[in-house]
Every structure is written in structure tokens, then in C-alpha cells.
Length: 328
Image (tube, rainbow, N blue to C red; front, side, top):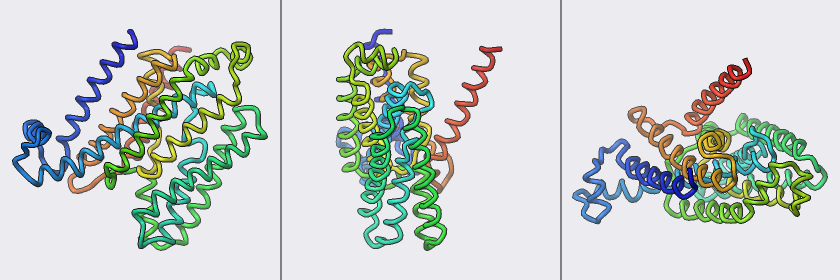
């Protein structure tokens, strides 16, 4: 299938997903009412408030976050040639969780500002450690292992602080770590979307260099690719995407690990198709996960990280079973 046809198909799928997702929630808003509100003819002030101030920011942030996480996972998997590479392997979520824990304990009165800011700084702290190690480690496999070690270390510190912390602050951080779009606003969508779009533009500019990495480091170098600088640049972009998403949405697992596998299977593994497919499918996926989170149980919102973890676990069990059958 041609790239233009894929892009058009996925764009239509995205518009449909966004439109339908706006009708789901605790308050019933029909498709007719949605169309009326979109054309400034809302017959209810309540519906207008729910649509423009609550649901639309959630849907748009969900799409931007899903697209960003999926693209980050796809690029990490391609540049490291590791199908299990994931943005969270570099300790970004653990660092953000540590920052959020410190904010909840020390800045309880200004938490709306302090929590995302501290989470972002914590994510940058963990990334900085990984980059520091990267200066001494040349093998990308060891860099991934270092990221996992940092993740466990920062996670252990966070758990200790939560254990000795005040119960209300502990519950708040635990819910945030499981991922939620409950408190997002349009300003956060603009920030997340700006980072994600900027990173995607840079990635697409280097798509031929990234494709060359699939041939092996020696072949890529012979084609004029600076392998180490390219990997560090891609790692920095993935880190920036994940940090800003985690800062406002919390921990959302498996999106960056699962969606690229689906895209490769149906659309191909070239960087152009992979990034375009991952951005649209990842965005739509997280939109519908959020719909499930706020609609599945009456008077209760589920953390979206729990849902993505369940779906991701089942997905990889299926992949393992398919792999065993093919080798059998």
C-alpha cells in the first residue's frame, strides 16, 4: 500500500475516533448534539462546557500522548535494533515518579504546578544519568541495561519515600503513576503536541539515516552515517517526548512497545511508514483506552496505565504463541 493511501486512511480513522470519543462519558452527548456544539449551536450550556473544557482536551491530549509514545518506541527499536526497546527502559518514568513524589510531599499547596514540573525535572534527571553513562559506553546493549538499572534505582527511592510519606500524598502519587488524563487542559495539549510534532519532523528528516542502521553499524558508517551521534540524537528526542508526556499524563506502559509491532506487521518497517503509522495508530489507541477508562465503570475512572498494561501483556503473550507455532 502506498504511503499516501496509508496516511489518508489513518487520517480518516483519526477523525472518526476523535468524533466518536467525544460522545462517550458520564454525561450523554449524542452525535446530533455534538455536531450542534461544534457549529456553535449547543442547546445546553452544560453540554458545551463538558465538550469544550473536559472531553476535547482529554481526547486531543490522549491522541498526542499516544502518538508520541508510539513514535518514541518505534525509533528506539529501530535505532537500537532491539524489538523490546521502550522509552520507559531508560528510567524516564521512574525519574518522573521520584520528582512527583518529592512535589507531593514538599509542595502540597501548589501541587497543580509543582507536580508536572517536578515530574519533568525528575525525568530529565534520569535522562541525564543515561547520557552520562553513554559517554563511556559504546555498545547500545549496555546502554539499555544501564537504563533498566537506573529505572530500578530511582523506583526504589520513590517506593521508600512513599512508604514513609503521608497517606494522602502517597495515594495521589500512586494514582498519577498509573496514568490518567482526568486533569489535562488545552494548554497541556499545545505543549505536548509541540514537542511531539517537532521531534517527528526531525526524525523524518533523518529517516534515511535511521533506515541505514537496520543494515548494521558498519554498513551505515560506510554510507556516511555518524552512528553514535544519530543514536544520541534519537535518544534525546525520545526522552523529550516521553518526559513531557509523563509529566502531565503519568505512567502509560506498553504503548511504545506494542504499537510499532502492529505497524510493522501491516504497513512495513521503513522509518517513514513506521512513524506515520505509529503516530496515527498510537494516538487512536490511547483515545479509546481513555474512553474505556472513563466509561467502563459507573462513577469510577480507571487509570489508563492499568488498561494499557493488560492489553500489552495479552498482546505479547499472543505474539509469543504465534512465534512458537511458526517454529514448531
